[in-house]
Length: 276
Ligand SMILES: NC(=O)c1ccc[n+]([C@@H]2O[C@H](COP(=O)([O-])OP(=O)(O)OC[C@H]3O[C@@H](n4cnc5c(N)ncnc54)[C@H](OP(=O)(O)O)[C@@H]3O)[C@@H](O)[C@H]2O)c1
Image 1 (cartoon, rainbow, N blue to C red):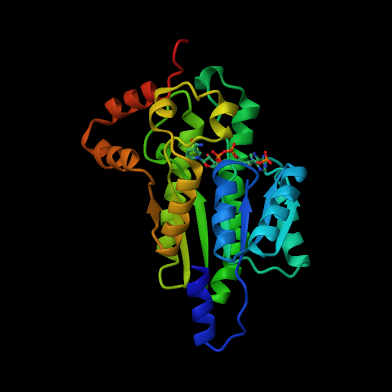
Image 2: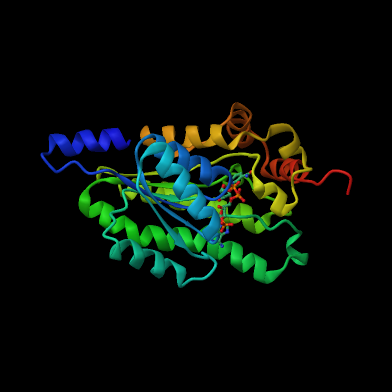
């Protein structure tokens, strides 16, 4: 899409400007691979996460290998003040964000009745509220410039309830619904929205939530690079919703023909830890 936007700029006689992507959670997994794919396409980047050491390491890697400009902002998205900090830092640096990638996220795995309330609150703040807040700040500027893209990371949990991941899956369902709704609001505005909905992906996510030993992860986990390549391609093609991987595609096609209670039971089985 960077190339498409640059051609559009040239046609309209504007000064050619490198596009800038802001990515949350680029220090690991899907976010890191998205940063690499966007760097390959020449996007300058603003990298946002909690781990400064990893942010500096990735910034240097991307600058040295792909010759792009990078900035990093250390922020804990579980802290609601962090969004204002991110917005002000980009403003102070005079950065225009052309692509906002809302990727940072994590899972809380437990039956809801036994789950830790603070962990649920943190999950909702990072996986949902930060996505809305960042979008609400950067989107009006994209609309003004009549160009830009929001890439939100959903999940196959966006379509299907997640027993033992109830809050996570409900949060991802929110992200899918929100993304599709604003994509329609933005029709014809020059600003696109894509919700990338992966199934299981081999990243630190599964270790952190201790769900690596579940049928979904054992049998269907994808490589994060493949997911990121598909995500950037979906964004370039301006797809509103994209499910990477053929097993996930088949499942997301078929699930609508079965009673919802069956699908929810299958979802519980797929995310059941083996041998416990
Ligand atoms: N892996 C899967 O199976 C899977 C499937 C479907 C969807 N997803 C979604 O894909 C996205 C990326 O997940 P992943 O698999 O790549 O996980 P990951 O490898 O654990 O990476 C998560 C990223 O989010 C950042 N992050 C987490 N909490 C944060 C916070 N409070 N503030 C700022 N940054 C924070 C982490 O950075 P720091 O630790 O440096 O802060 C890290 O860079 C998530 O939205 C996840 O829900 C994952």
